[in-house]
Image 1 (cartoon, rainbow, N blue to C red):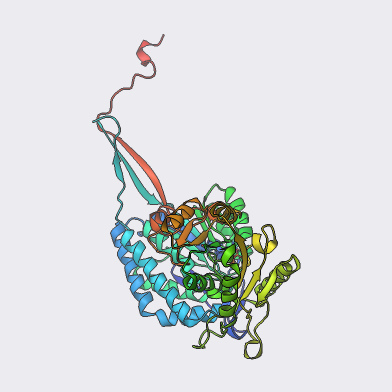
Image 2 (cartoon, rainbow, N blue to C red):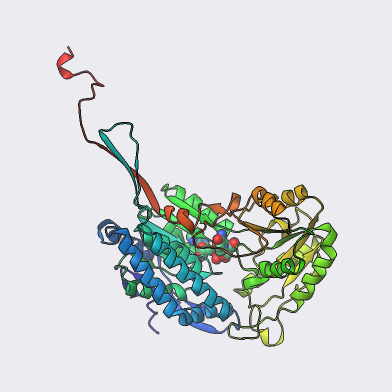
Amino acid sequence: MVNPPASLFIDGQWSPSSAGGTRDIFCPADGQLVATVSEASTEDVHRAIAAARHSFDTGPWRAIPEGQRGDVLLRAAAILTERSDEFATAESKDTGKRFVESKIDMDDIAACFTYFGKLAGQDAGRVVDAGSNDVVSRVVYEPVGVCGLIAPWNYPLLQAAWKVAPALAAGNSFVLKPSELTPHTSMLLMDVLTEAGVPPGVANLVLGAGAVAGAPLSEHRDIDLVSFTGGLVTGRKIAASAAGTVKKVALELGGKNPNVIFADADFDAAVDNALNGGFVDSGQVCSAGARIIVEESIHDRFVDALVERANQIKLGGPFDETADAGPLISAAHRDKVTDYVRKGVEEGAELRCGGAWGEGDLADGYYYRPTILDKVRRGMSVVVEEGFGPVVTVETFTTEDEAIETANDTDYGLAGAVWSQDSGKGQRVAQRLRHGTIWINDFHPYLPQAEWGGFKRSGVGRELGRMGLAEYQEAKHIYHNLQPSVTGWFPDGSTRE
Ligand code: NAD
């Protein structure tokens, strides 16, 4: 038997699974084997948690000045930039994503480490007025402790970076569990962090399926915070199991994001961005603009233009420079998307394009054609549920109020867009949309310095921005009485009979 690979990073050492478990990773673009990795047993996960706990309770990371921790993050950003091609290649093989898109992700990942590296040490807390000159009262920010970080497969390293960078900047130790489908860039990251100066035991990596490698991160009493990005169903499980030890919970869940287009929008820009919003990364984006809500008077022209453009999208593998979009993550996920579209059509949606798998050269991968479902109604499953594939639905409205009401009629609240050349209207609508990010006349840009997260069932807490760092901190109030004295609250012993 071949020795299981040493794919788990625990206490500064690479090790194989204690139970010998392995998983083959396949490229979704052609079904070819990428590599075999070890999968953690429960014992391995407990070992990683113990290493993180020990490093936090005794180690140097949280004790060093925040600015120096920031310097380590900046070094990590520089190494990630230097090794960007290598990382992007690994990401593209695991996800099937186009190499150029993985390269953009790498820029975003380096920017995230840079942002949190610079933010570390900028806020040393504050002195508050205690109402007495004899008291110095300070609020300071301390690391939460040991963090369990659970990431999804769609932006494997980017979503992990949104957690790892602020967790480290705040002085925490962590155990990271990437999706079982996309482990490789998280593995590469561990060596980068070591090279940048993160001490052993602070950064730990376990691989494997959620039930074995992920669940202990929400259940274990030695984990102080669990931060999860993934689907709503898993998010609910994590919140419920974290409740047992009342740990802090941060959840970045799904979205069903409206893209509201008024008749006075820049037509070509709105069509183009509706295409980007719906079909970038084959729609496997939590903030995908899957729900197009267009003013009735331009509906026909808009959808015709969108269909024409969608039909021109060329599917292909990560290194096919002529391709515009890649495959879905797995055969199982493509089956899910196929059923989702079928059900939508059964419920009355009009299939304007797509609804088909890739053929010919693409038959070995998990490709699905960009799909537009017109004439949908609120309440239909394709309007209510997240599809997480290259599928957009089209609804219409006639008044501003109706547009807003339709866009807010979802249990989710992650992101949304409004298109109009009337700035007042754009701002008005943006203010009334109940979603965590609103784009006016754009779709998809985000900034590491601006908070990201969901209203309603799209999540709890925020990543990125100052709140993204605060997520990994505890606030402590230190009240220092400079003139201690007898309070006289209770009777003096000498006066009691
Ligand atoms: P998923 O919920 O299936 O899995 C996410 C991660 O959780 C994986 O690492 C998985 O192994 C792990 N997991 C599964 N069960 C677990 C358990 N019981 N305990 C602990 N961990 C467990 O999601 P996915 O399919 O990987 O990703 C797609 C979903 O992620 C979509 O719903 C998408 O909207 C969401 N997402 C949200 C954001 C955001 O910023 N809000 C970003 C990216 C993806």
